[in-house]
Length: 122
Length: 107
Image (cartoon, rainbow over all chains, first blue to last red; front, side, top):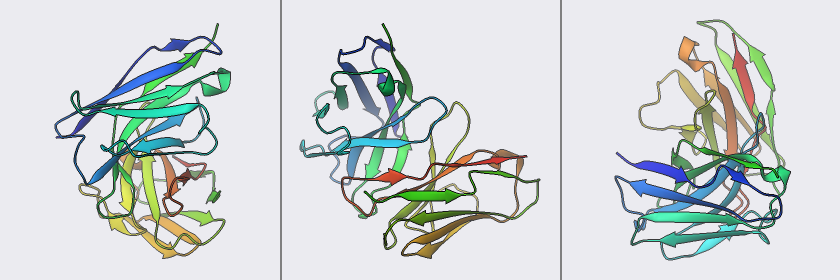
């Protein structure tokens, strides 16, 4: 059974860089059938897609965050990562990693990590 | 960007009720519409993809319909475990996937 687990600091200072890693187990991140994505949810609010990556390293990002966001993949560790630079309080959210269907071309997110809360505060 | 608007934002219902949640896209998204269920403190769970395709393990009381800009999620007979927040999502616009604001289903 596929499992995704987010990890990283729960507290980040304003203007610094938020870094999170998603470890995938029970399946290979190098599958040609999937992209791997990051989604966030500010406390008490809705869901926002941040960006997605293919095992080859091909990425696409939400234009709202493109200038501050980098997603990378490490196939040797079966992980993918998120970096958000110059964070502000508005980046405080639960961050989810998720598997994104690619083979059927419907692009839904069918497996999610449990999420990790990142608070931006001094 | 394609905007997704759900209605209602919240809904009170009882066990056994038939419930319908609506999602409207700001432009046609063909069949690229998915539904998720989220319970407090949990990650979202995929219920339905491509308008009407039930994800594996999802009870058959859930169904989806619609096309172009107007879509609905229907729960035919509410069960206690269905009280949650529901989100629609469009994946038509590659690279700019957007979610609806959510519909909170309460007792």
